Image (cartoon, rainbow, N blue to C red; front, top):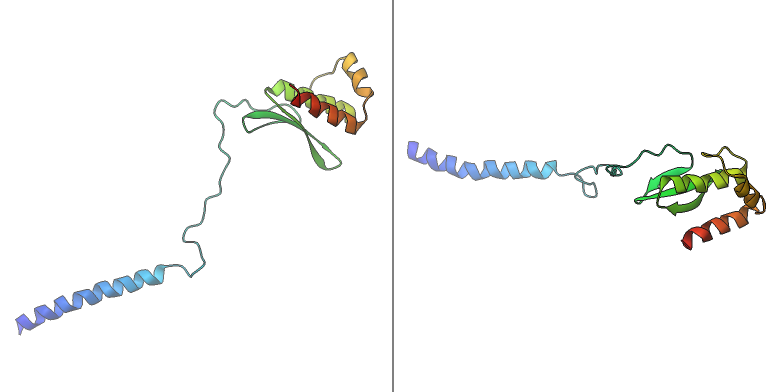
Length: 132
């Protein structure tokens, strides 16, 4: 009698693993659902990056960029190599819009800027950056 019980246990063992595989099948998500939730990709913080303390200046793509908001629209002023240059771009635009600059502009520069209309100023600023 004991010899017959051994084969039954042996034949029963595949059924146990078979039921285990059916449990694994149950744990799979419904078709179309992702198995893992993706982590939100955070921007990599660049090492040794100076914090930007100036108005209208930000660091992006390893360069300093200047922008100003006019009529609820952000206007890109240019991409330059240093934070100071970007701040200077913003200051010129701020003067044109009657806003507070980061640094005070020289009188000659103010006189030069008064000649331009806003659209001309933007075109001139962008042209001077691309020609550098």
